[in-house]
Length: 343
Image 1: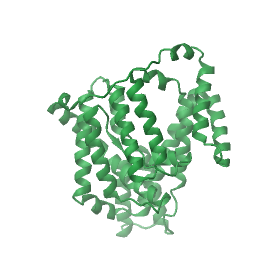
Image 2: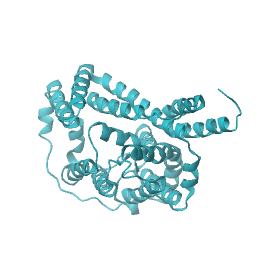
Image 3: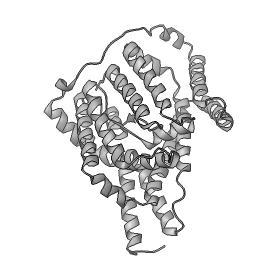
Image 4: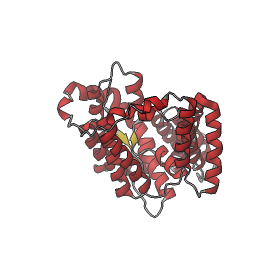
């Protein structure tokens, strides 16, 4: 499977800018994890049309969930221990994945960790900016051949194409069944319930609702696939990363969005080379700290022992799958509520 970087980056950038302007808090735009993982691991069987079809299904699904009020019913069922459990599970999964990525270059990762701890303690110098510069320098020092490869980067202005006509009915059906439906529970736990809780905890002056987030995700997924983009969501992990490295407004999203938009429009033919430069180990450090930020926020769940049982059980399942964590948490909280068992 091959999706052109042009449409992907341009739609990604535009949607980030729109999210920053609309929400005015760092509510992120990020690729959907389950769909992205399937597209990478099953690249021989997954076509671009199936990915775009999954995006259209996702857009229709979340728009309907938000506008019909179905999501309001679901959100009223969810207690704080379940929400915090999903957030804790997501944070721990980020920490574990970050550590795996750091193993690719242990020395660079240790230096990046030390730099990040020092800069986050001071808060005067933006840690993310320093990490990016350090990562680029480390990559060039480790592999001087990259200097030659960088000469291949060239200006090549292009506009994305309208791809709706390339999506067949078969693409839509297969994309829905293989990619879209399995993603839905994960999106519900991470990119609807958890992101709403995190935004309202961190930015109570700019609260959002599950309905607002769902409708927003519906709209962006009806736009992105039309121009060659991929399914996107508002993930809690993305917000944790932005906040951990200093973002407090939508301006952070706008800056990233402008960068991606310019890269897509002007350097899409060289984009793989551009992203190849950045070390995986430094990305692991960024993911590690985003996970710490998320996991540390999983507190204030209540005073009852049953609340902590629900929190930890939900988190345990959520490390494996956000949707499974959500369902497990709901079942456990109901069992405690009905006094089926006590702790």
